[in-house]
Amino acid sequence: MADTAYIAGIYEHPTRNAEGISTAELHADVAFGALADAGLGLSDVDGFFCGAEAPGVGGFSMAEYLGLTRLRHMDTTETGGSSYMVHLSHAAQAIAAGKCDVALITLADRPVAGKAGPRLAGVDFSLIPERHFQPPVPPFPMLGYAMVARRHMHDFGTTSEQLAWVKVAASHHAQHNPQARLRKVLTVEDVLASPMVADPLHRDDCCVLTDGGGALVVVRAEIARQLKRPPVRIRGTGEAMQHAAGGRADLTRSAGVRSGAIAFAEAGLTPEDIRYASIYDSFTITVIVELEDLGFCAKGQGGRFVADGNLIAGVGRLPVNTDGGGLCNNHPGNKGGMTKILEAVRQCRGEAHPAVQVPRHDLVLAHGTGGSLAGQHMAATVILEAM
Image (cartoon, rainbow, N blue to C red; front, side, top):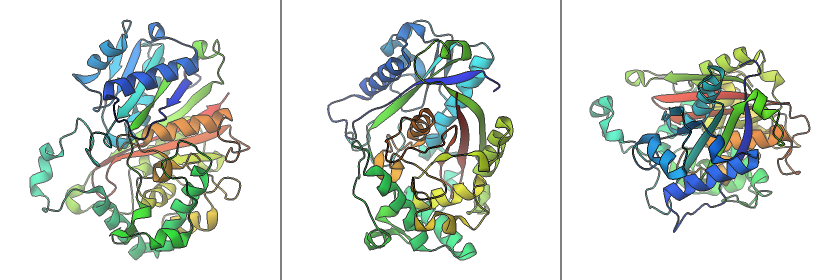
């Protein structure tokens, strides 16, 4: 990735309930917002990346809707919540290969307004080949993550109080975000007092459900240097998949072990170099497992690592999800990867809210998972550098 691709523009849609706004309109809103942030226009875009939630036939329906007439590269990879880290990596690779110069990446969906619940648009889980060989358990995400949490507790002594600290940190950050879905500052006791939804996960251990979306503009290095916005270099990326393994998978270990190692090796860095981290937080246990697998602490020590405010900006050792994350701010379309990149870029630019801005923000990380840590999933890690 040596000085190849930079993030030049970002935008997060302000809505959390898109009543009266179509999915296509949401894609257009975030696309125009990110391009405006970069100081570029539709006529500059020659690469387009989106997921399965884009309406129509793949990406080219959205490309026509947006008026992208100069496209020479398109990628519609779908890996759930990690899709947009994967898109960012693929955009950087496409730019390095000379396939495009200005890549636009969009996410937008409306499961709240559309009353679709916790599903992924454009994905039919009933067609998964092994589905017929799995027990007839309702495929609600919290059930699998409850298994992960219970196993982590069994193996390493992790407690519900430690899980709660992840939500507490998110709430401390969300209070400074006027767009956050939940802005009330919580205590550990508040989290434990919320209703149990899937033992040992309480309601406040689970992420919010929102509409909206976001977009990124990724450009060649030469173009980035001509723009007015602070350039953010893509220093390293990694992606890896973990299979359900017929039920024999280690519930406490994710594909982040490999995606993180690949990204750090490519960047020539270690976890000790990172000043801020955006970690996928579909559930509180997700953050604990990923912090371990990315190397920020030893396996089994994640509960102790997050306790006592260690993830809170200005208080803890490693600020995490300073926009409030998926637990309090935004989880558009049930895919939290995009918002993780957006806050990482804000931190890297020095443009996060002053109350949560990390003083040393030259190297930051964003990490996402798509699927379920309890079974098959795709992990993707991105390391960004302020220039």
